[in-house]
Length: 175
Image (cartoon, rainbow, N blue to C red; front, side, top):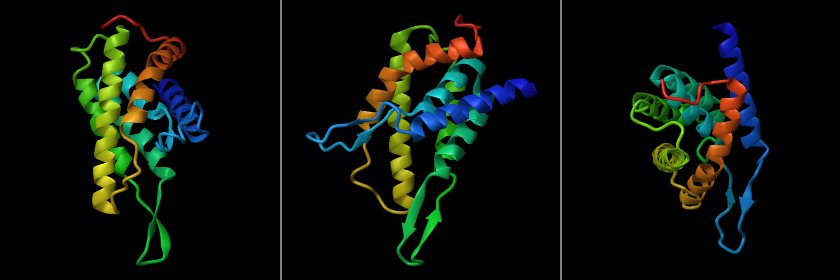
């Protein structure tokens, strides 16, 4: 149990750093999209939610969201200081992990097409929810990309799923 949790924690940290160093980031200046990057933490949450179920999806989503929130700062005009907004990503990633974990028996875990659709839909919905929550808490950002990161994350997901399946030695067949 402890060894499994440690290995999952190492995977979370590696996913966090892959996202943090802007690994595989695209920037299309002519389209004015800003930086588009794959969400490795969300792929990690989706992977374990599909393979292990809703309870694991909740906890991995919570800690992945905390890692994501740890780098999030918003400037408060009234207080003239930086204020951390903790919990937005944690809440959304927990809900995503729980929902996908509950649906894991209905999903084809080994089909690349189902992985592409699931990751695209999840990433798109998660980004919309985060944009809405951040807008209600602080202010809405018109420059927050929704579609680009969802497409890019879906394209990267099958390769990342294969790497995670190999590293964690999880059976690729349904339970």
